Length: 631
Image 1 (cartoon, rainbow, N blue to C red):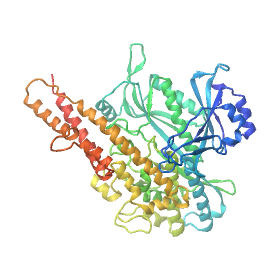
Image 2 (cartoon, rainbow, N blue to C red):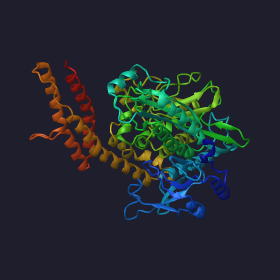
Image 3 (tube, rainbow, N blue to C red):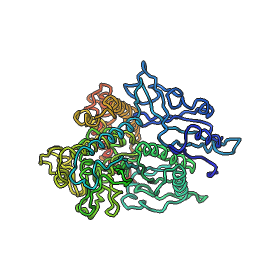
Image 4 (cartoon, rainbow, N blue to C red):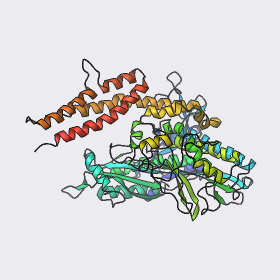
């Protein structure tokens, strides 16, 4: 069957007549869907009969075929109820994917019914307002400005890449996808998972049964879609599955990762990541397994990241490709001046970027010490250029191969599978460009730039902020106390509101990121407004109610009159009441949270959420101690 299916239509290989002729050869493709991506990263999906694509081809590319409204997509304060229409414009510059329904066979061909998914832009009042258009405008802006600056300025240390020799600039990007899979309705205790993780029983181990089958099928299917998977493997989280009486795997709960190759088109990278999630979810479902892309599905156990890589290449007029982040001599320096500028730009502006990367409570729950997830705005480039850094405790690391200058790139470790990859890549390159602009205009030598990147908190420099350090080759988790980390690298946000304050309290950094109007302030404000809406709704209507149910489930279990049991239950019950029970003299913590949200007192709601996050694990530990003291 696989050889008979068309999985994708490569960008630029077919004109209108070629596309329609190709589709005529595949009558199993019954529908077309325009895939717009709103500011929350949600993708649209429709079932338009393929006959309409044949009849009205041009209309799909001119916004006349499909419309939606503001209630269907997240464009907060933009597509309002009294001005709601949003038009969809198909994008011919990227690959188009065919999404097959293997449960609905076409009676004429016997093949699964297919939907041609065409990535699209969303237009509101003659303005493109979607995540895909933000990324496209951003890389176009950075390319245009950087080309002009390099052609008009001499950059010390970049003698191997002269501006007048550059014909074009390419953005190399890739993501890594981590996720949890489990048997539906099966439950494994957090303690069992945590113990397995500490014993390192899962990482890079052999997969078994349905997990192995699904992993192999997912890697093969990704390849069929042109994503060219590099590998799939077990991650650190999970427990050993059990075998039922028929020899099938049961009680599956494992963390996995799949990686695929880079592209030189960030828009294609983000589209690929969206398609990869669809493929992974469907393949594992076909094998009876549920997939979650949550950043931290289980508190106290490893979360799922989506490390995002970004680099910059120049194509010279003689056809040669050169990595702009690589130095002329890989053994004498870790980075080129432009590479140093790129990482400085990202780190300096990261407080304003972070709300777009980690925009949910779930994502911030993942960013905790001890889980190889970043907590500090800091980089590592290696103690010596001859030994590449593999420091996994920093926010953004340098990936390099001394024998392969083309491999030099940065890996941002904070994104998770629900991060909006489109807006994340846009902001990463806009921030990097700010740092590269500083380097180009400063005329500083590579040694001077390296000194600035390596500055102590008290050092005063021209670009990076006083009172902060930005580079560490140490283990950020183990070699610094929390107080030392906060003093050197800035205090990390504990809640969505604290994270959003990084955007609201740094207008000068927002100005940098909105330069050129590629990602306009209006669209950024809309993104942040959507983040706030989701945070308050989730906190009041999901997180607090879930904790209320957890507290209610903690009942006394001992029937004998034992002093130890009584004392432990009294301690548990006192905390239960503080959290969940209003009394004549005081309102519960949960009540105060919901009231603060209703009053839009976000400082109070955020502070109470921090307290709740501290007290709930304490309550669970006390109750576990109480209930296990039984014979």
